[in-house]
Image (tube, rainbow, N blue to C red; front, side, top):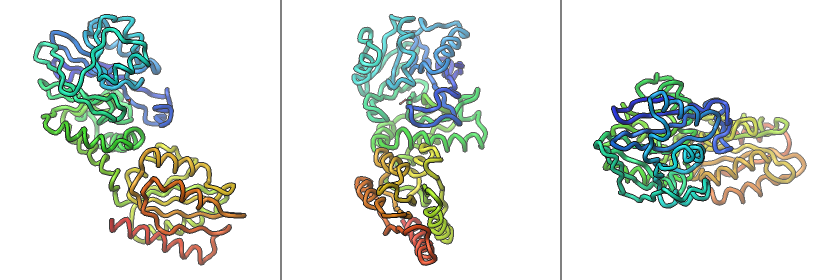
Length: 405
Ligand code: FEO
């Protein structure tokens, strides 16, 4: 955990999580990217810590050591503000409370309920609601904005009008380690590009189901003169806070209309479905529409979800397996439903051996997804010339539809 000044009286402390755990929320891989856990200290006459950290790896040790190196300790904190109770931000709470039993814990009413169920804490807590304030003295009056379902029901955002810093917790966050830097003006263009990819993946994995609530939250924050966006994962945006705000607005809009690109998700047992897919891809390429391709189950679902959320077009290519969908694709489709991958223009294709079955199960599974489906195509065994020719045309048709959205 490091200690970085945002102003003379506001500081960021963060820990990079690298290697353990490998899965965020127990689902989404952070093996390659890592993730940072950011906390913020606001020092007026009283001191507030905004968001805590997990008990992952040595994250909690890092916060203690950062405080110690600045002549502080856990006991120096008068108020602990918990914008969100998910354990990546609160796993250290039991130990914190033992060390500093007098610190008042502030959260929304729903957050206070979770304090009791997660950590058996019900004393020394204060529930706040939209518009409530906390005066720390020294010109720091913190305000609270409830932002329900961004991304759990109890979430809120904390605002320091004096410094113009928005402490947004998960909102405006990203996967990706910080590697010794915190602020947007400290990263290279290439690093920013990598963070952009990771912020989309983070959004698609964690927040996409709640895009309507993200839009409501963005509307609520509009009157604020935001000078710095300080999320609890990823870069702190002190130079160009609009970059991440606009990026989140764009991500939220993908729930209704994606980019004019196609995501190809495919699985194949012995290459027969793959041979048909190659023809579809030739058709897409002839129309010049960019596409991203993911094989399941090889590709981690986290990356599949990010592209499927972002792009307007989708190809699902899978064989029939035991009279039903290819099981790894059944998982993908189920996750698309759970994550609201709605409003896509979709082509499904696939081979069957003895008898079909994927079609029936697939068509029932996608009913809630509100997809605009092209006529699907199945063939027995290896695709013959007539199959390939038709599949190529279907690829062109899908690409044209995506272009004309
Ligand atoms: Fe970063 Fe929803 O926890």
